[in-house]
Length: 100
Image 1 (cartoon, rainbow, N blue to C red):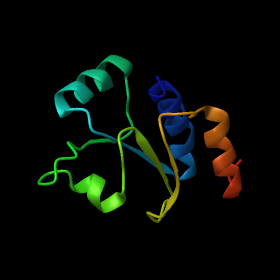
Image 2: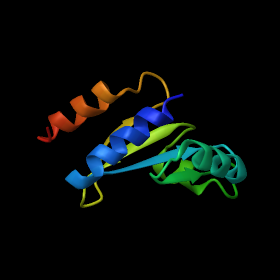
Image 3: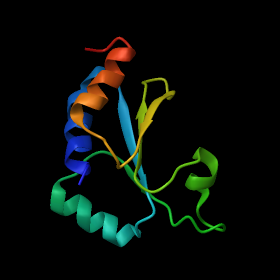
Image 4: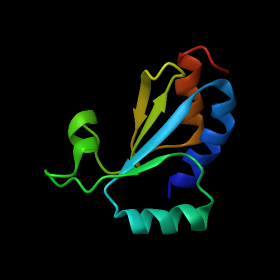
């Protein structure tokens, strides 16, 4: 499960002025259980991907398990998926933007 890595990264990087948002297609009730069980504190958007209600997927070309690294001014710096996410990858991405 990638969320523990993502959460650790979020906790380390938020003091540097970066944000992190995760988008999932899991139902909100399941996401809430997972958040509570794992102690997740970063924002997670639950989007059903339904054409009538799945506006996050449509607007941001998101898909299940996509993580967005966001600069303080709101610019999206990078996106990561469930596959291959790790702290070294996230830290390398920050270093590309001058953050060590």
